[in-house]
Length: 223
Image 1 (cartoon, rainbow, N blue to C red):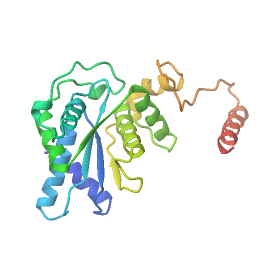
Image 2: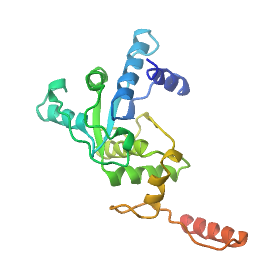
Image 3: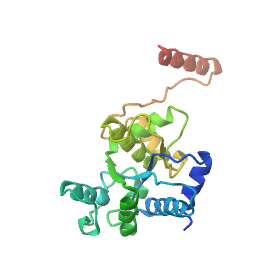
């Protein structure tokens, strides 16, 4: 009931212009269920005349809903509870959604059906790269937001989401809570390449040296 208010706050921030898509990181599946409930209730109140399509975004290391969705899609039907089977969640950088048997699964399936939604997944490299790209735009994203951003890139890339669609990505935490996720990526300590690493530069305690390094980096970026 508390999380469903995200739908109303989202619309308020968008001046009551409904998005086409809302992408939500999914582990225990409470957020995607609640956000769908919020939009359904807003429609019942007459505040919106349609529902945005929801995308539940899972880490490939912990993806029971994604597997259920793909199982149903391969059979040419809408997802149902019988498509679901719990999985053993493997270690993922998106630790808060490292869940193989989500509590809110029935509600999440209803949310997908109600909103004509989808489920997508992201690998460890994809989520880390997506988070790093977002950080270059002035954000400081958590790995779970990286999952959703990576799924957005995939869905735009394959044409599922139009490039001119109105899209909202739900960010579930701040990157400061996951400083090790950032340092491991930028120091290239993971077992996958860091495509957007911003490696530390060692220098002396000299302000002019620091300013010079910043200007060199800006010049390289501009060129």
